[in-house]
Length: 330
Ligand SMILES: Nc1ncnc2[nH]cnc12
Ligand SMILES: [Zn+2]
Image 1 (cartoon, protein in one colour):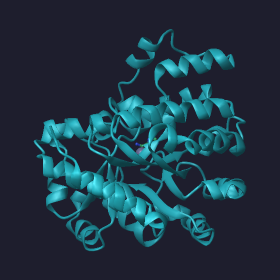
Image 2 (spheres, helix red, strand yellow):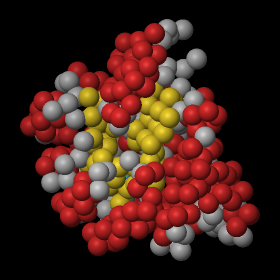
Image 3 (cartoon, protein in one colour):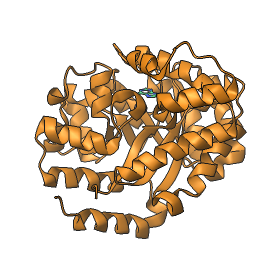
Image 4 (spheres, helix red, strand yellow):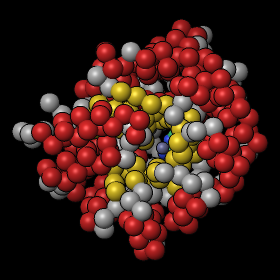
């Protein structure tokens, strides 16, 4: 039995496996620019975040109907369950779909249909976090938030993703203020490729409660001190960092140093179909590469539930935490 954990940094579109992509392409009459799943997999040689995003947005062309989004989420949940995930806070990128003529209703409808039965089928509780694409305009983000208003009973929070450098958090001040007025929780990618100042800006200007990635915090001791003082959770994605060349090899990932500094670290998969592993695989990979002992893994699992947005369900959080404490490694 795998260690129980929450996954807090997971783009549902990044769980699209080549086999499902080809199945959906055939179902929807979409022609992919790859002859086979093998050829598609061979294209997963990324040099940076942008080179990944180009392929990731391109492959989304196969996602067209509510059923497609439900199938995508179902496939993720089945794999996550095998990897010990008990709770998942799932990102989605509506602008990438609406730009292709797929409505918010289709996206949220399909995803939430799969999530509605996740607990009984997979034993995984779920929340949805809607991300804005930071390389698009603030106006587009605001329009996206407006388009989501009829569905806010199914959306817990907002996030910020896509190409980071040159798109600082402050660009989205108004849309985050409005999200706050609507009662949404707030997270943002910061410090993946961007400077540590983006992390501070996301906290100060956007008032986010968690930082997605936060890897570059280690370049600025003052930023580390702030994150430690306020116990701001970081949703780290070590396999993603290697595949997108933020670090050269997993052995050089600063996770150990970050935990030792007192940062509230969690480990997540980001886009598991593209980066070589789901979250349980990621735990194994960092355990091996960094020599983490069982107590460090237990701390990461504990942190994942502590950092989750289960505030309205403290009883459930306590139950998950008790599972972590009772877990015996074999
Ligand atoms: N790692 C990542 N960084 C920014 N945007 C993303 N969208 C999907 N994965 C992402
Ligand atoms: Zn991400």
